[in-house]
Image (cartoon, rainbow, N blue to C red; front, side):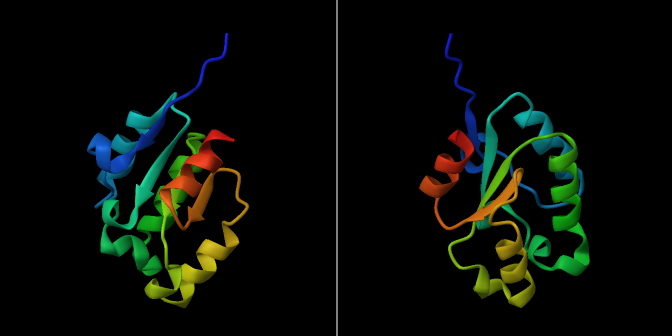
Amino acid sequence: MNEERRIIVASKSGISIRSFTDISDAIAACLGAGGLILTEDDLAQEFFDLRSGLAGEVFQKFTNYKVRMAIVLPDPEAYGERISELAYEHKSHSMIRFVRSKDEAEAWLCA
């Protein structure tokens, strides 16, 4: 039997990560799914300020719970050099990827 795991699109599922407390709710909503697609609109501005620790906590928790996550960020450079470097470092990560479109996110999560 071919059982395709569903991909969750944050904006369509009421998921957003605005604070540290939102991380557990997002993971709980995604357990058993094929992955989560987040756009820049689904993330707090603090996510893009790496000093806040929000991005690091998101990455750590999603990796620990083995929930794949694609972050759609058409222009990482717009958020500065550190986010651009982070996106580059995650271009082949097995759990977390920065991608430039939702189509690219779906293709990776479904692969």
